Length: 340
Image (tube, rainbow, N blue to C red):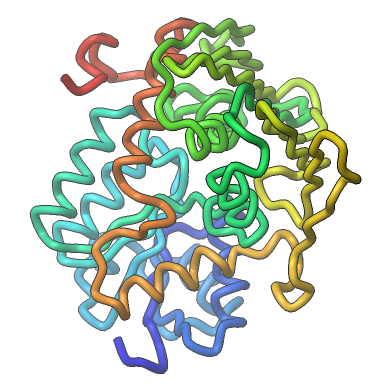
């Protein structure tokens, strides 16, 4: 790694890997030097598409490539523990997609490994790196709406997804919660921390994954959060934060917003919009920039996406799954999933 360029490896070649790589190659201080897939052909096609010099047909070869500063893990979340662990064991720094792992136990293992090795590790929760979200959080922390009373967020896709789709496949950690629900859960915990009590209900598929889930979180402060996710109905993907002295609304696409509106009693609504220089609202560049900033600073985790926060979200997802009765193949009993 130099001051001019951070060298990236891409592990997996699916849609999110392509979207992230497209943004990376547009950054002047990022260099994508290698890609790996389970097959050589898939890696080769991906490498040719983005002009990547090295293509590997297995993950271990990428992990062992000492010319890589950081690996972006973009597999389905059922493989995150294996893929990220392989890279950390080899001494690579890692940015790992969300949901971070299948469960909190796996997440604890990755965090412990990264801390033991002194390697950088971060969940790819791009929402936390978005400048609009960062501004919203700062306003809340500065007391702009008083004490937070309620958070609401939803994320649903219309589908329908056939039974063979990864979102319906228990072996790939399918269901609405880990793929989509991680966003409203993470949004609520960004503002309020880990909830003290969790209630949840869901509609399950014949395969045993959640088609839609609704949850109510509560905190000792008296605050509540209502979150919803679905793969059988498109939702507006809006969010709001209500406080004792006002409210903030994100009108759509709350997980990658380009604006929000602050409402305060006795004042006109105030809109906060993204800087046009930040580029398209779907950009993943903000999290890439944060990773590269942290690496150059010698940090082993990001203050924007701290590992303890990631672990707290995973514990919440575990508890929600326990409430709705979703367990993935090979998982131990629910009591064994959540660390003591």
